[in-house]
Image (cartoon, rainbow over all chains, first blue to last red; front, side, top):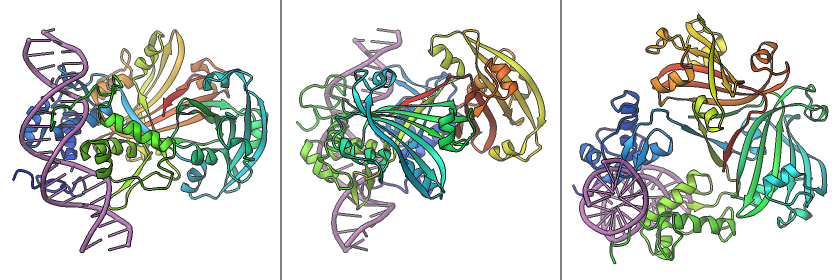
Amino acid sequence: MTKADANRPAASKAAAGNITWQSIQAEALRRIHDREWAPGSLIPHEEELAAEFGCARATVNRALRELAILGMLERRRKAGTRVPLNPVRRATFQIPVIRQDVEAKGMDYAYQRLTLGTKPLPAAIAAALSLEPGTPCLHVTSLHMADGKPYCQEDRWINPAVEGAGVQDFVTISPNEWLVQNIPFSRGGIDFSATSASPILADMLQCKPGEALFVMERTTFSGDMPVTAVRLTYAPGHKVSTAI
Amino acid sequence: MTKADANRPAASKAAAGNITWQSIQAEALRRIHDREWAPGSLIPHEEELAAEFGCARATVNRALRELAILGMLERRRKAGTRVPLNPVRRATFQIPVIRQDVEAKGMDYAYQRLTLGTKPLPAAIAAALSLEPGTPCLHVTSLHMADGKPYCQEDRWINPAVEGAGVQDFVTISPNEWLVQNIPFSRGGIDFSATSASPILADMLQCKPGEALFVMERTTFSGDMPVTAVRLTYAPGHKVSTAI
DNA sequence: TAGTGGTCTAGACCACTCA
DNA sequence: GAGTGGTCTAGACCACTAT
């Protein structure tokens, strides 16, 4: 009976009385929902809960730790675990390669490079990348198409120090995809915003000038090295969805 | 030597040779970055890594499990752990109460209810909430202000079955805040998009008609019960930021 | 200073899946 | 059928912080 029943159905079958960290998490969520654990109040210690559920403290710990990461609990040593009064929920969303994004929607993907050149880096982008303004950088603009219609316009600056970038012409492979495959697993920031279509953008995205467009801007670093800054401007109607 | 050295500096001091799951994770990330573990290739088993790092398998497991959640590794039983070729990265962002959002930016928050009434639910929103179209629902519109200027307009439908919602006039507390405090920890979906300012919105947000505005739409459920659908339209220039 | 969460270990069993 | 990840246990030490 000591150690004979690990690895229960694990959230697949909601079977009888098996104790998994998922089941403890679910029960904790229920108590929070039902206000058995009221907002602002402390909940029992891990040890207490472990005794109640008849499991090891580590199992309780894992269940509650994940809830804390999601913002549904606040944990502090010595202070205990509390249900926050004003929970700051966290949601996650996926950042796919554009081609996969399009194909996942069941549409045909196509890509078209527009311009390629080396230009001095504009100040705003230099700041975001921690590079000197005016540094010569690769500048690529391109268009991603879905079912033959414009899907999103890509305006990208690439640090020329990025290995292999200088010899790419980005005609057959988009900088988006090339970078993901060659400089993967980078860190950076993402901003979402809205912008009005300039005449030039409107022409590229086949929409009306002034129309509201969804914009995603990313800066990317590989370790400490700035890699790229990109601005993706989507055709009208684009949405980014996530679940919480 | 058996069990004498748990709980190392734990990512605070990057001390000498202590083994923590963070240090293993960092080393794994380095190997991925430096392509010692190449995209598409298998990495060593947990047991092997545990032997290499001189720690328990569980410690390796925790380090790699988190990387898998972040999309930097793909793990499958029997198949092993692989560096994905086309990583689908995941980012998380926070969803604060609007008041906190404003105050976090160092601005003064104010709130103003605009309209309150009970109306039949429009079809689009009914569908999102899994309610019958035409169901009488609370409809509240309000305006959130930052430093005296419009920050975001809130257009919200509330399921009348939500306890206590019917007796609220939402004059002193915004539905946003009231719901967070009274129906916390709910599930739902979030959409980000862009829209052009209608004349009415432009008037409320003190911007030009047609200007591009950032929109966040959320649907919220508490357990199985639909709670609310809200559309937040932000004044021009709003950004949602996150790090990856 | 004492209480609480954070983490590690060593061992074990199981679920999943590839071959 | 066999190999790999997923999880649980029981015990332990430590870091952090409220008091």
